[in-house]
Picture 1 (cartoon, rainbow, N blue to C red):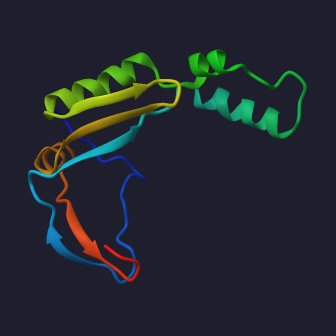
Picture 2: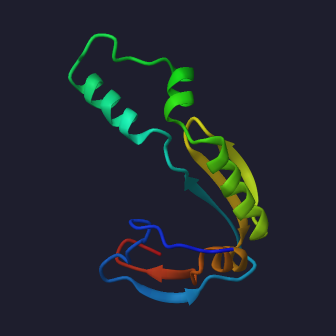
Length: 125
């Protein structure tokens, strides 16, 4: 499986934070994956119309989900990625463009090419 780093997906380390320990490899966790929106240009136009208070700019929930939610093929691609990585899809909501994945630290490290760690900083760990 080819992996591509998504611009803007990196998490920065808070100022003054220091790694205190590697995450336990068998620890289980869940993450939420935000799937790309269908028709981003149409969504931007709708947002401008709503912001400008234009008449008829409202869209009901079902139509909004169909037009601007995640595409079924994108949801399927994330589900396939999760399956191939040994992760479990806990929930999937195309209208909210969100999938929750569950697995161990080892599985997430491998799936996302990361090394999860515990950090300490002035506000806690």
